[in-house]
Length: 140
Image (cartoon, rainbow, N blue to C red; front, side, top):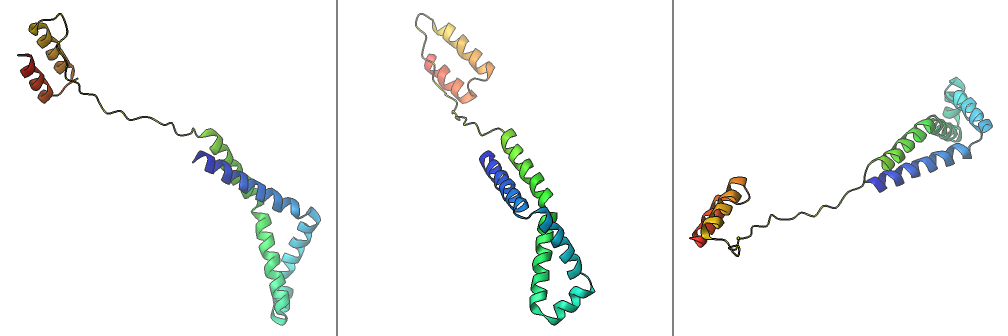
Protein backbone atom coordinates (compact mmCIF):
# COMPACT_ATOMS: atom_id res chain seq x y z
CA UNK A 1 0.00 0.00 0.00
CA UNK A 2 2.80 2.36 0.88
CA UNK A 3 4.61 1.91 -2.42
CA UNK A 4 1.33 2.23 -4.32
CA UNK A 5 0.57 5.58 -2.71
CA UNK A 6 4.08 6.85 -3.44
CA UNK A 7 3.96 5.77 -7.07
CA UNK A 8 0.39 6.93 -7.70
CA UNK A 9 1.06 10.31 -6.07
CA UNK A 10 4.25 10.74 -8.08
CA UNK A 11 2.48 9.87 -11.34
CA UNK A 12 -0.27 12.42 -10.65
CA UNK A 13 2.31 15.08 -9.82
CA UNK A 14 4.33 14.37 -12.98
CA UNK A 15 1.26 14.38 -15.23
CA UNK A 16 -0.07 17.58 -13.67
CA UNK A 17 3.30 19.30 -13.99
CA UNK A 18 3.71 18.08 -17.57
CA UNK A 19 0.27 19.34 -18.57
CA UNK A 20 0.62 22.70 -16.84
CA UNK A 21 4.09 23.33 -18.27
CA UNK A 22 3.03 22.24 -21.77
CA UNK A 23 0.54 25.10 -22.08
CA UNK A 24 2.10 28.57 -21.68
CA UNK A 25 0.45 31.45 -19.85
CA UNK A 26 -0.30 33.17 -23.17
CA UNK A 27 -1.97 30.02 -24.51
CA UNK A 28 -4.00 29.73 -21.30
CA UNK A 29 -5.25 33.30 -21.74
CA UNK A 30 -6.17 32.56 -25.36
CA UNK A 31 -8.02 29.38 -24.33
CA UNK A 32 -10.04 31.31 -21.77
CA UNK A 33 -10.87 33.98 -24.34
CA UNK A 34 -11.90 31.42 -26.98
CA UNK A 35 -13.79 29.42 -24.33
CA UNK A 36 -15.74 32.55 -23.41
CA UNK A 37 -16.59 33.15 -27.08
CA UNK A 38 -17.66 29.51 -27.52
CA UNK A 39 -20.00 29.75 -24.54
CA UNK A 40 -21.58 32.97 -25.82
CA UNK A 41 -24.16 33.51 -28.54
CA UNK A 42 -21.40 33.65 -31.17
CA UNK A 43 -20.26 30.16 -30.24
CA UNK A 44 -23.79 28.81 -30.40
CA UNK A 45 -24.31 30.30 -33.88
CA UNK A 46 -20.90 29.10 -35.09
CA UNK A 47 -21.52 25.60 -33.68
CA UNK A 48 -24.86 25.45 -35.43
CA UNK A 49 -23.31 26.47 -38.75
CA UNK A 50 -20.22 24.27 -38.68
CA UNK A 51 -19.38 20.96 -37.03
CA UNK A 52 -15.71 21.99 -37.05
CA UNK A 53 -16.49 25.02 -34.88
CA UNK A 54 -18.54 22.82 -32.57
CA UNK A 55 -15.65 20.34 -32.23
CA UNK A 56 -13.15 23.16 -31.64
CA UNK A 57 -15.37 24.66 -28.94
CA UNK A 58 -15.66 21.26 -27.27
CA UNK A 59 -11.85 20.83 -27.31
CA UNK A 60 -11.33 24.32 -25.85
CA UNK A 61 -13.85 23.65 -23.09
CA UNK A 62 -12.11 20.35 -22.27
CA UNK A 63 -8.71 22.06 -22.04
CA UNK A 64 -10.15 24.82 -19.86
CA UNK A 65 -11.63 22.21 -17.52
CA UNK A 66 -8.27 20.43 -17.27
CA UNK A 67 -6.51 23.72 -16.57
CA UNK A 68 -9.03 24.49 -13.83
CA UNK A 69 -8.27 21.11 -12.25
CA UNK A 70 -4.47 21.62 -12.29
CA UNK A 71 -4.26 22.88 -8.66
CA UNK A 72 -6.35 19.90 -7.55
CA UNK A 73 -3.87 17.58 -9.32
CA UNK A 74 -0.97 19.10 -7.41
CA UNK A 75 -2.83 18.86 -4.11
CA UNK A 76 -4.03 15.27 -4.65
CA UNK A 77 -0.65 14.09 -5.93
CA UNK A 78 1.15 15.77 -3.03
CA UNK A 79 -1.19 14.30 -0.42
CA UNK A 80 -0.89 10.77 -1.83
CA UNK A 81 2.89 11.07 -2.05
CA UNK A 82 3.17 12.35 1.53
CA UNK A 83 0.83 9.64 2.82
CA UNK A 84 3.06 7.08 1.13
CA UNK A 85 6.03 8.51 3.03
CA UNK A 86 4.26 8.69 6.39
CA UNK A 87 2.36 5.39 6.50
CA UNK A 88 4.56 2.67 7.97
CA UNK A 89 5.17 -0.48 5.97
CA UNK A 90 3.93 -3.89 6.97
CA UNK A 91 5.89 -5.77 9.54
CA UNK A 92 6.06 -9.49 9.17
CA UNK A 93 5.09 -11.12 12.42
CA UNK A 94 5.56 -14.79 12.82
CA UNK A 95 2.60 -16.46 14.40
CA UNK A 96 3.74 -19.07 16.80
CA UNK A 97 1.42 -21.66 18.13
CA UNK A 98 1.51 -22.05 21.88
CA UNK A 99 3.76 -24.87 22.87
CA UNK A 100 2.11 -27.37 25.12
CA UNK A 101 4.79 -29.55 26.47
CA UNK A 102 4.32 -32.24 28.95
CA UNK A 103 6.60 -31.54 31.82
CA UNK A 104 9.06 -34.23 32.49
CA UNK A 105 9.80 -35.01 36.04
CA UNK A 106 12.61 -32.67 37.00
CA UNK A 107 15.70 -34.49 38.06
CA UNK A 108 16.29 -34.45 41.75
CA UNK A 109 12.69 -33.60 42.66
CA UNK A 110 10.10 -35.74 44.30
CA UNK A 111 6.58 -36.36 43.07
CA UNK A 112 5.30 -33.96 45.70
CA UNK A 113 7.43 -31.12 44.34
CA UNK A 114 6.46 -31.96 40.74
CA UNK A 115 2.76 -31.89 41.68
CA UNK A 116 3.31 -28.53 43.34
CA UNK A 117 4.88 -27.15 40.14
CA UNK A 118 2.06 -28.64 38.08
CA UNK A 119 -0.57 -27.00 40.30
CA UNK A 120 1.21 -23.65 39.98
CA UNK A 121 1.29 -23.93 36.17
CA UNK A 122 -2.43 -24.74 36.16
CA UNK A 123 -3.18 -21.86 38.51
CA UNK A 124 -1.25 -19.43 36.27
CA UNK A 125 -3.19 -20.62 33.24
CA UNK A 126 -0.16 -22.03 31.46
CA UNK A 127 -1.95 -25.34 30.91
CA UNK A 128 -5.57 -26.39 30.47
CA UNK A 129 -7.57 -28.50 32.90
CA UNK A 130 -7.30 -31.50 30.57
CA UNK A 131 -3.52 -31.15 30.36
CA UNK A 132 -3.33 -30.74 34.12
CA UNK A 133 -5.29 -33.95 34.69
CA UNK A 134 -3.18 -35.93 32.17
CA UNK A 135 0.10 -34.74 33.71
CA UNK A 136 -1.14 -35.34 37.21
CA UNK A 137 -2.05 -38.91 36.22
CA UNK A 138 1.49 -39.45 34.89
CA UNK A 139 3.06 -38.18 38.07
CA UNK A 140 0.98 -40.30 40.42
